[in-house]
Image (cartoon, rainbow, N blue to C red; front, side, top):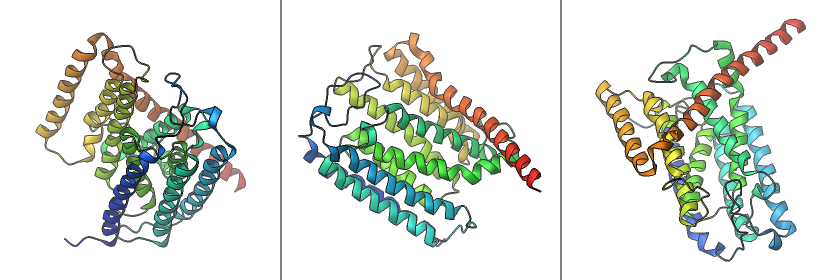
Length: 338
């Protein structure tokens, strides 16, 4: 079957994401002389210039880049919200989004080389983490009608509230992605590199709104699964540098890995058409992996497996309730005007 123009552009975009990641890796050694303050624990963001060596340009340049990138993408997303689906084709808005994202990625790479810092020097580290967590909650909520929420089953969300969320989710997700991208300097350490590659894939997903790529259940599941790679690698990287801040067992990365892989084993895999034996094999492999990891970390800490699933599933039900309230409030407002 001949690939559609959207599918061909998607393949080139993935190649571009790889190339940009390799560029960051190649330039990484040039940042070795940047002075960092000692790590101060889990709430401290290590990849920032030591405050004693920081200049005005360290602070202002990432904010200029972030604001311009954010406003540009928001303008495109607002126009995309008015656009009808065009599954196999790219519109001018898709091309504009790809071009804008590529331009600002290159500008951030240059800005890092010249002044290093991201906006992390002015905002708390949890703000970046929670922006992505809420994004994952939105995805779970939006995908429930297509694959269920747990073991292929799920609640029947209010259709009007779901449509309301679907209309506006692009504005939030585009903020979460651009904000998180400019939060970090484009460092070349492997944990951050995986994060940047993942970010580039998410920006590709955003740029392909209203096409078959954006609506692909399998592609969305792959993007969700990649969080389970990035989170543990960052924790391992901090552990190897002696800055993990975890004194219980071999490493807190096991909590991240087991939590995010749980989401794939019991939710994400239902994005794919698989025989029953394959689904059982995935779940059994997950349980065996968790057993092995916590035999090493200590079974007294196996409760950690629940942290991420409880946060994401709980957040999904909370979002469903908020979306219904927001839709109802909007409906009452329209009724009064009528």
